[in-house]
Image 1 (cartoon, rainbow, N blue to C red):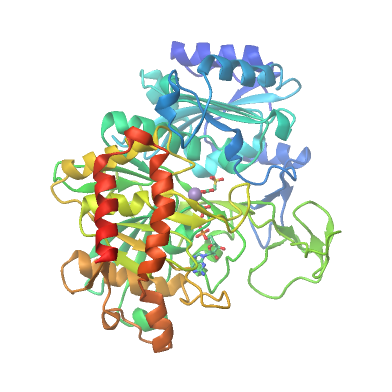
Image 2 (cartoon, rainbow, N blue to C red):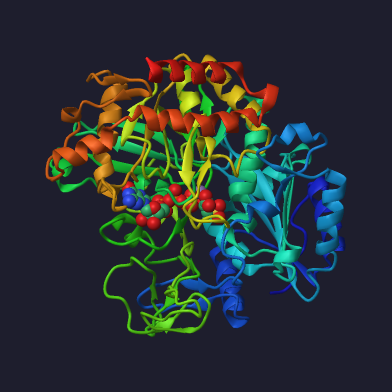
Length: 597
Ligand code: GTP
Ligand code: SPV
Ligand code: MN
């Protein structure tokens, strides 16, 4: 692609691009205008140089495959830093580095890293261009894969540049693949400078800087200052049989079911009633208190970066339709006919293919340790436009977003938490969110299955001291005239043999229906020490055959287990020392009292 001229007139932007080009030493600079024409050129170039592989264009029009380096398949939290003047400001929940040192360390890796490459300038908006909710960023990158993903995940191009030229502020995002060397990989956030520097990685969450880096880590920092919330939440609309739509926002840790819930199709039993689901977002929500005193939310993204394994016509039929065109697949298996496959995909296991590492693959292959080799990486993903989704909400582009009736927290807990419970009030709900925990999944590097505390599913994404974040949540409750009710769900409780007790996926709508009825004060519930638990008869189980024993297990609140859990909660809270809000310690003591009563 030929070098194009600076279409920017904003001095700050021009100077920054020049400075970064001086540091990274690209051969040329190309501005991304968001046009389909430029996108086609980039795709062609990326196919030619092997960054992406063109898939069967008859069966999967506009679809491509990308393979990352073998040690670059998930977010690397140990290489992710928040760089503020004071260490205290990032809290024990973040890695900290002094800004000066961080710029130097990353700068050494960035120096001339773009030699022989093009630097792309991507002006992007998180949220509808022009909305009060939205934030603007500019990402500089030497990866065409990043450009092509950003074109799907964010709103890119001329309209955004116009806003910057008119004097709008923007987050300065710098990315280089450099050598893709894990020992020279750093993901640095400078909230005080509204800047992100990411180097040495090519994996989604590390390099699509509009996503976790801007929309959560930087945005949470801004949200605290500006009195709003930036959260790791899906947003969905539930249309009831009368046509009325209620919206909920739900925070589950990575790979714990946000995407699947956000676009579920009602199970047969409930479909007869006439429910419909409308998808607003599957990963990130920005929430503000509006003039009516209620909480309103937008999804700042315009695409899904979803987990491939397990996605099929049973678990997520809407996603199966969504990813049939204009989709970039990362680290999945390529079949001989140029289509793709992953563990838990539709149809038969292919007899052969090329695995996510580019090697010939057959079912049953084992590695040197005798472990089965999967065709797709467990954290393989697809990047696909929200507008392809058959359940996309017509309110996606509305500048004020949607009003939120319920906030739902959830995690992957084999034993502890019941299928669903409701917090007594906002403050107790913040306690419930702050005590969330989940078993580790493949979405982050580390030991899978280990329980880790993950408040509000934000542990890896809160860009400042989490004790201050809890205070901020408490304050937000005070600011609202009608705060949403807060719930906790757990789709992942298992029996003695490790089998899930709850069918999950589309059947989760049965639980959501209960949640909405509680929000509208239509039904009662059982008061337990941890919160309100459903009377089992209030959950519509039409068409589901679950034995009484299973149902009892699903809703059981075992006091001894909760007292045990409190020990780990106390260890976690104590990490924040005197910064921890006393209100949450009070909730802690009250829970102990209720459990011991
Ligand atoms: P991130 O994109 O990493 O933030 O993940 P996510 O929260 O959007 O998770 P996603 O919906 O992609 O689901 C991740 C995994 O959980 C997939 O393997 C799903 O098959 C599985 N899963 C989702 N919902 C359910 C459920 O209700 N029950 C069970 N048992 N598994 C589920
Ligand atoms: C997550 O891990 O929560 C994701 C994928 O949504 S990533 O963009 O890599 O963060
Ligand atoms: Mn996520």
